[in-house]
Image 1 (cartoon, rainbow, N blue to C red):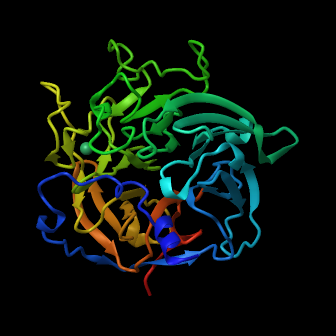
Image 2: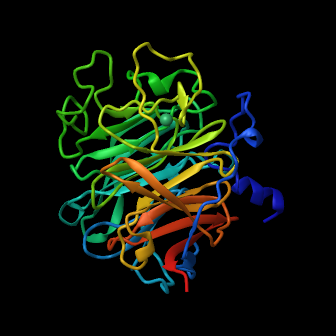
Length: 404
Ligand SMILES: [Ca+2]
């Protein structure tokens, strides 16, 4: 592949195509932090596999210990949890139904979540851009009747049809919470500056995290609304909304020990942020970017904004890829720390956080550099964390290990 194409593939998924408009330039920002370095390294793993853009890595929670790599083009590969594995199985192929263009690389197949009772009901859920543009689907699929190890491409049942005004900021995380409901992380609809004010608008799903009950069908929909969703009694508000004021959720995960919902919200001009999501919370966009004022255009009097627990400036990274609170066993140094990276610079960090005092501790660097872009993190069934980055046409998968 020539150099130009390689650069196109490496275009940041989230932030770079928006035009900086703030007066403050990144080089005028705070000094670059000298983060302490953890004795942890990144190690390439599953090196025999050739996986195109792996935007989701997850497991089925069914005791099979399989790992699923979802390619943004629309194919889900399944492998046993064996780093030497050579031949992945195709779990599902809906590439013909997915819109993906490497030059508009925030679209495509963006999210995969297995039902908490997948082993019994064979249900799994996808978030993807449909072929006929600017519309995202959250859909239920089932495994084949005669082969539960494979997904059935003809089993789709659409739950949410999400109109996207622009090709960027599609969000795309879907995850089941500890309450059994499906959470959907969206973006503000795209372009720059949130031109329609979607972040602060409860009458649109855009700019929000949604929460739906996939085990019910109500009001002519293929899902139900949890009775305690925060805006079910707010006039004009979409009842699916769980939290709002978000620009582009590039990854939403749950801490498997505490159940806390962690989100990386991609910034525009200067600041990348990490949020812990509470029900009904307004996370500020586009009135705020990180801990800073951004625009008054859609500000409402009396609005309360929840600050991120942590932010970093664009002098160290330009687009957050949020990961997991590490609860695995292989790397004691990471225990309880929140792993995240920057899509553009490829830096990887582990952040300390105390749930009791609600304060962050040290923000550790993991020194082994990875080539950007860092696309996603994923958890295996036994709680180890994997990370994916992209080189040209293919993804590279990393695991974490204690440094010698
Ligand atoms: Ca915010």
